[in-house]
Structures are given as C-alpha cells and as structure tokens.
Image 1 (cartoon, helix red, strand yellow):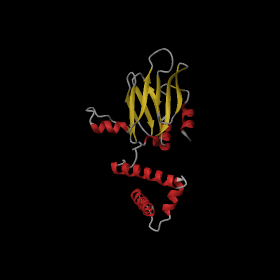
Image 2: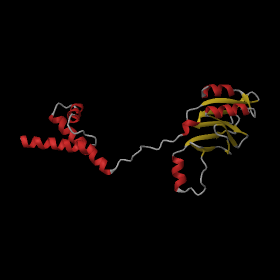
Image 3: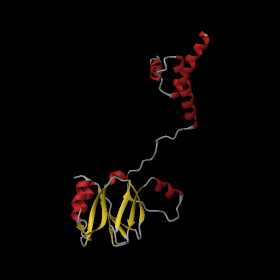
Image 4: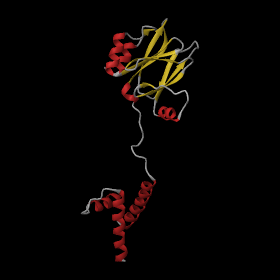
Length: 204
C-alpha cells in the first residue's frame, strides 16, 4: 500500500475515531506518518512517529530523520543550524465558521484525508513517508579558493584552445585524454595545456 491508499482508507472518519491501534501499527511497519488535529491545541502524529505536539493557534513543527525535532530554548548555534536542516509542517488553526479547523502545509510529499464532525470536514489530515525526512546536507565538499582559481584558469585555457582549434571543447578534452600519462585532476589538465601552449610559442 502507498500513502495515497492509506489516506483513502482513513478518509471520512469521525473525530476521535481517526485511526485504530491496528492501523497505527500498520502505518509504522510501512514507514508512514499520519498527522491530524486534536481538540483546539494539539497535532497528533501516528505510525512511524508517535507524538503529540502542542499547537495552540497554530505552529510550525520541525522534523528531522528521527522524528519531531526538540527545539532548544536557548536558541544556541547548534539548535539554529540543526533546524535549518529540518523539514517543516505548518499546523494552521482556523477558529472561524468556514472551512476545516485544522489544515497542514509542508514541502514533504503527502496525501490528505478528511476528518468529519457533524457532517462537516473538521480537519484535513496528511499522510507522508518517514524516509522523506532525511535532510540534504549540501555538497560533500565546499569549493576552496584554490579550486575556484583552477576552474577559472581552466575556463580561460579552454577558450584559448577552442579559438586556436575548431571551437569544439569536446575535441580538445579528447586530445588530452589520449596522453600516455593519464590526466586525473584539474591541476594535471591545466599543466598539460600550459605545456602544449609552450610548444606553440617555440613554433612561432
């Protein structure tokens, strides 16, 4: 079963009968997280995450790969950096007469289901996969100043070689790949191109 099928199974349930203990276990085994509102001040997580989060008048909930992210009251640099890697779910409380009391917004891929009260939609719950909480840590290596300089130098050298040749960058790369000594780094390629240019000067 996928999250759409699971959400469809829950769709139309009455408030306080949102999900059974057996369905909670099934969601946990499937790696699904079911999110819905309870009363006017809580958001419930069931399945692969089992938590209750206070959300009086709405709240942004932070999640990491382990589940609900416990925020640090001191707002230390560690907490701030950790939160930047978190996924978020925005719990929106609507105490007006029109529309559901609870809705949720998130960039996590999800499916929705309706929780009913007296024939009206009381909450728009969501179902998502816990595997989608894994944060993206950015590139494995931050480009150093030396690497930036080498790349700029390489770009300029390629322009020179293209102007002197047929204008095809792929052809120039292929020529250098046929060297007896394999070229494996940017530095080696730059060195080989500079050596080749020195021969041009000798021929002139």
